[in-house]
Each structure stands twice: as structure tokens, then as C-alpha cells.
Image (cartoon, rainbow, N blue to C red; front, side, top):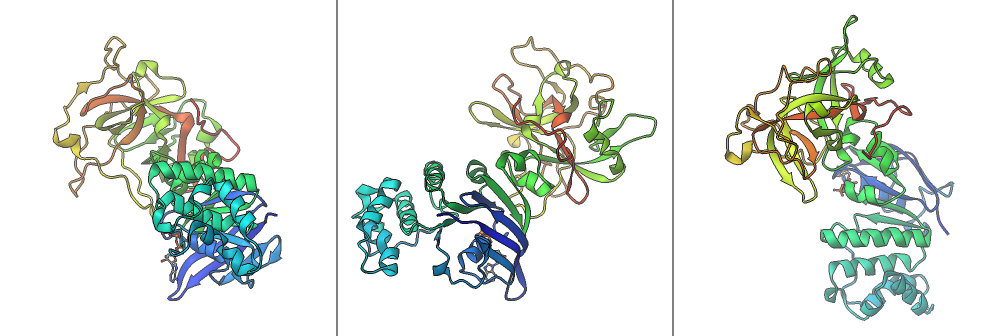
Length: 448
Ligand SMILES: Nc1ncnc2c1ncn2[C@@H]1O[C@H](COP(=O)(O)OP(=O)(O)OP(=O)(O)O)[C@@H](O)[C@H]1O
């Protein structure tokens, strides 16, 4: 049996007027796997605890299979919760820990068959006579999962169940949890602040910020069509580049986006999405550029949908199959409130002065130097940036992060041309709402 879970206008206020969750609406279908994602303190655990009955709902309604359930004690909800800290009884073996809920529920029942079944599903048959102190973190979490599934709950509520484990084990257990819940066909609500975990699990992701639900959708939709700048910044690795800009839309000239030190002209005729930018004329906007939407390549290789910017290489993160190149364009980066860790500022050239005016060459392509911008496509070349200069705090403004294949090996301080795919540009208004691409219209593609 599985469960539909609905939250209708649910608010949770703690003493001293701490609003942990504000008017949250979420419908979870029977058998669905939904991930609650958001930074620390955004209210994810509180939502889960309200569903479990461990926290009272201040206002709004919880429905289980369409029935009002705010008043039901936890034991009557048939939901199983798993926490990050396992919470196993240290003086009980795995077998006793897993069987414990059954012994409480029905002391005379022979729990053997159900405990064995849980152990088999989790592949922990050989660990059943060990005590928690004799188990690794991953094994303990499997036992905790066993204790959750043994009661054959109608839904799983998992609160960061893997965050105490190392990265490799986390990946493995993540896949196991997804397989197990699918096999059991049980509704699952999974809380995490790790966006890569959220993207790899679950049918849908619900992104929260400051107690408010920002967006729900498949991982792909949330990545491709973020409703606002917060979702765009929270979902995706490396984090989306967010640049402050202004739209210029003269009646008798071409529309352009001005980044302060450089400007890109939008191709004519304007696409429907670019038309939407006209009303933003003169207002501050935020332009979002994912690292796969910009490439380091000679202007001669520019495609019709691309525009040129110039920048200076600040830092290169070697990743094996590719590099993440941080390039300073002189554009100002937009800050997003409520994100845990802003990108660390990049130290200027690891202590070395970037070499000024080094000309970028494409390795293995005849060492061609970058010619000027294509007429009409961009004003980048005429207004190329100077190497990054320190901010008043002494930090260098952080750069645009660009993915580069192994055939591109830029050096620190090198000036490089950046080809920006205008079809993959996101534009957010001064309130952070996505203007472009419009819903249902052209959407940036993941695959290139
Ligand atoms: N019992 C409580 N009393 C007062 N405030 C609380 C209580 N529990 C949680 N809060 C507050 O409610 C807000 C949401 O907390 P919650 O634990 O739901 O966030 P979270 O997104 O799960 O965070 P984390 O990822 O760090 O666990 C926070 O500001 C927190 O300080």
C-alpha cells in the first residue's frame, strides 16, 4: 500500500515568531519520490516532521490519501522516518534493532520472517548479529533503513539519511535507496541540501528557500527552466554564472545587453524571448549563463546564435576530462540572498600577476591569434576588459566559469575570447523572476 500526501497552505511558526514554513502547498502522488531541496535552515526538516506528526502544524492542512490528518498521532500515520544519525540502539544487534518496531507493535508476533525479508532486500543478512559499534556508517544506515521498511510503511520520510557518509558510499546508497523505494512502490519524501543528490534521485524536486516553496518539477525542468534566480543558482554544478546587466532597446537601433564593460548585440530579427526583454529597457537585470552555454573559441568559429565577450583567465580547475576556467570579463556578478556558500573569490593568478595582453591561441589549430569581433555580433572586442582588479575589500571579482575540453588549455592571465550561446541565456528581472526563456517557449538544451 502506498500513500498520497498533500500539504495545503501549511505554515509552521515556532516560538518567538520564527516562521519555519510559510503557506506551503505540495501534492505528492502515491508511489512518487519527491526530494525537498534547499539550503540549511530553509524549513525542509520541519516539513518532513509535520508530515510525520512529530511537529504540530500551525495553520493549513495535511491530507493523507485525501483525509484530514493534522490531528493523527505519529503511530497512526503508517509512515516511517529515517534520520541522518541512524538512531540505532547500541545494546541491540542489527536483528533486534530491525525487529524492534514490530515487537512494540505486536509483542507476540514472530518477527523473524519480516526481519529476514528486510535484511535480504538491503543485502545485510551477514550483519544481523552485529552491534552498531561493529558496523560501518553505511552499514548502520542500512540497518536503520531495515528498521523503517520492516513495518511495511505506506511512505518513507528520509531526512538527509546519507549526509554522515563519505562521498563514494553516499553515491552507492543513494542508488540503493532509489532502487529499493521503487521496488517497494512506496511514496518517499527525501530531504537534502545537496543539489546533486536531489538531481540524481526522485521523480520531482521541490526547492525551498526561507520557508517558502520556490518551485517543484522534475530535475530536468528545474535545471532548464528555473522560475527564479535563486533556483537557477541553487541547482546545477558548477553554479550558474549570474551577471548584472542592463538592456538597451533603442527604437531605431539594435537591442543589446550591456554588462558595464562589454556589450552584446542581440541577433536580428529578435527571437520571441529576446522581444520579452524590451520592457526591461534601462532596468537592472540579471543574466544567467551556465558553464556549458559559453565556450572559449576563436571568434571566427562563432555560430549565428553566439555573441562574443572577452576575458582574462583567472584560475583553471583541472577536472581530468575537462577544465573549469574562471574568466574575468569585468562584468559585475549578481549576489543571491540565502545561498549558503558564495563562490570563493579567486586569488589573483595564484600570486602571480596575470600577464597583460597575452594573445589567446587555440592549441593544435595553427596557433591562430584571435581576430576582432565579427561586425554587428558584439562590441566585446572594442571594449575588452582589463585584467581583474581588486574590489575595495582587496578581492578580485570572481570570474565567469566556463567548461573547456582538453584541447583548450588557457594559461593564467591570458586574454581569451568567449562565445556565448544566446539561445541558452537566462534573464531575470530586478526581483529575480525569470523573464527569458518564457514558459513553453524555447528552452535551453542540456545537450550540445
Ligand atoms: N524547535 C524549534 N524551535 C525554534 N525554531 C526552530 C525549531 N526547529 C527549527 N527551527 C527553525 O526553523 C527553521 C527551519 O529549520 P529546519 O530544521 O526545518 O531547516 P532545514 O532546512 O531542515 O535545515 P538543515 O538542512 O540545516 O537541517 C530554522 O530557522 C530553524 O532555526
